[in-house]
Image (cartoon, rainbow over all chains, first blue to last red):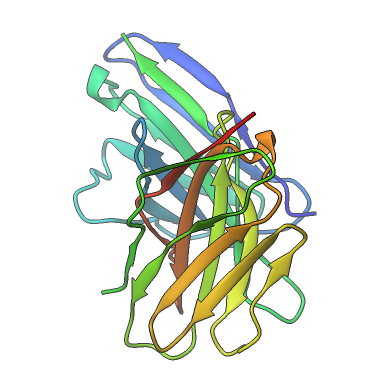
Length: 118
Length: 113
């Protein structure tokens, strides 16, 4: 249980285009999901919290008009990078919390999406 | 604000040796959870072990165990009988309340044959 998928695993796009990344919880429901960005050899940086049925909550310094998040259902959240530029090139990872018996929610991560903007 | 510090950017040991990764954190809360995640070259984040702050007993998962010192705010990971497949980035993480994970900077561990 607690499997999270991401699609696509990698994408190359031209500058100025938009790219959509999907995050799915495959065998559980998630009212919240999280989107991270990771630069090479660095830790994960939380970008935003995706909330099912309501607006996403963005971390300070993250442009909400650049990174559009939609939590369409209890198993799907999407991140759209709008008008992508080379500086948006990065590794994007999503996670979803899963409640383990007798414990707290534990974050399970998708495999990540490598975005390259030319 | 909660912070997590991993003071060892890189470590390297021989296969079958035991290695300990350090992690300290700062919080004023009493109830929280601590995690170690592994990120191998595939970059998939994998949960290694979890510790509830209210439990005094250190968590163990096969070859992985933690030394949780709540008063010292320390949460180290010990890997016994290290294997080549343990080569990865290891991230210590903290969570309390709002489910926002706070990560440390990571330790790059290399297991040499």
